[in-house]
Every structure is written in structure tokens, then in C-alpha cells.
Length: 184
Image (tube, rainbow, N blue to C red):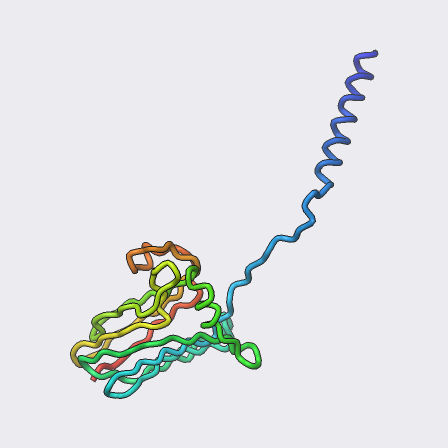
């Protein structure tokens, strides 16, 4: 009889200890949430001795039912362009310049460029504080007249350094857009 009483006491104490420790919170500090940027618009400005061209993707409803509106000016053949990228969140008024955040957090961001057809080469013109490429500023070289595509992808928290490919970069995609271009 005494054994049952002791066993019940031990079980009751164990249950109370479990309830008390599972209900108490020693850490009242809320978890920091780093919200992902909303990027509705990517504008790429390309400038050469022959003039300038603009590539733009604008998706004002985000993941809504409407596809982005994508435009691309024609490029000149066998030309080196100086390029720059501006990212905006146009769901806010005035529009928020996300490019500033990418610049401030350059060690956590990198643009990647995929080329096809008459587009020959992209080289980075800017780096983060560790000397790794960022890609807000770059050079694009076109080849002979024809057509091609340029896919621009912004990765958040990529592995740095990397070999310049998305496969080696890791991280999460903040925005990706393919532009079809005519090279004349």
C-alpha cells in the first residue's frame, strides 16, 4: 500500500514539473523576422557610345493573376554596354527603391546573368566589401546581329565566392526575369 502511495506521489510530482517547465518561457525576446523584399519592377539601363537601351519587367500585382509586362529595346551588334539595375517596390507610394537595400547588404546579394544567342559576355563592375561580385553595375558585350536572351536573377544569401553560376550560388531567388532581345 505504501508503495502505491509513493508511486502516485512521484508521478504527480513528475507531471507537475513537466507542466511547469513546458509552460514557462525564459525567453521573452521575440524572434527577429527579416521580411523578404517585394520587388515589382526591374529596370536595366544599358549605355554605349551608340546610345542607350532599356530592359524592364514590371509586375504590379506580384504573384497575382497578371503576368509581368516585359519590354526590351533593341541592342547594337558588336557593342560593349555599361549596365545598371534598379529594383523598385511599386506597391508603396512613393515607390521604395530596393536597390538601396541590395547595395547596403551587398555581402548578402548577387545578380547572376544567363546569356544566349547574340549576347556574348557579362562582367561585373561592382563588388561587396570582401571583393565578391554584386552585379548592380556590369558590362554587357553583344555579338553579331541576331537575337538572344538575357536572364537576370538576384539571389539572396548566395555562397560567396562562387563560380558565377546559379547552380554554385545557392541562396534564395528574390527576382528572376528573362528578356528577349534583338541585336541589330
